[in-house]
Image (cartoon, rainbow, N blue to C red; front, side, top):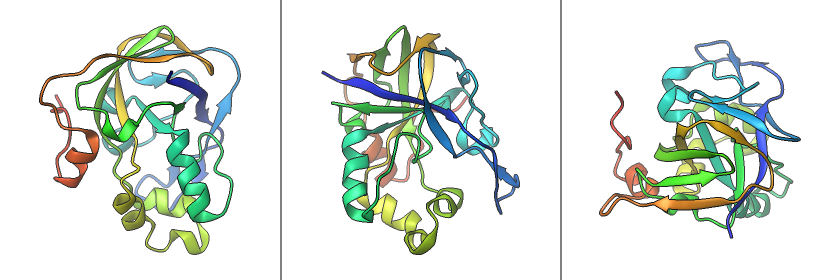
Length: 188
């Protein structure tokens, strides 16, 4: 059974060399239920909604199984939030999720919209020797995780079950969208 292992919100805004000058990628797990609104988690921040937020990228999910794969690759622990994710989940292949697929998680419903595209901010966050070539390495590994649109607001917390409630026939997976250079659901 798929479930949420951690709900993560911004821990600290950090200076960054990117266009905004600061990043909210430093996410950490929090205890208890967290309200989910159309633009994401209460107490989280999206500083660059063009690239990392807004309604079609309100939440970002990453799987524990993919995190463990990266832990072996990088030789270090990668706690929930390290990938900048809002939801660390387990028991579901998030990269096989279809665009338009809907999930219920605790009291919310979300829709898979598109894959995460690795960026320079992410590479700077990774840091050290691992940062060199990170964008390409992360992309080639195909362990991206999906962005999610909030369909029904509510609250979510660690331990909530995650259930796939609908999958559109013929829809591509987020990995197929990424590898074809597509963008996922049309942005309004």
